[in-house]
Length: 88
Image (cartoon, rainbow, N blue to C red):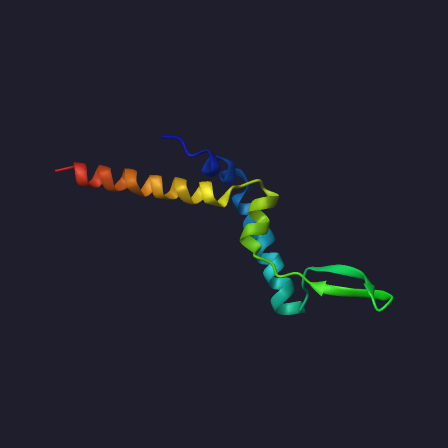
């Protein structure tokens, strides 16, 4: 069986990990956050915090479908179980 999302993830996994760690470091050590701006806020600008699921953002950036990735993981586990159970 093939696992296209895992194949797509392999070459970017390290890069994704580093970016994720950097985003977490920014939040934890600098207090920085991702935001959007509301130009209509009292005639000025206001930064509005955007809640971020880092895993989802990175998956979107690298064009990884997390639902398909999970299905592939389950398929891998089924294959392993069948292999183990099928051996004497």
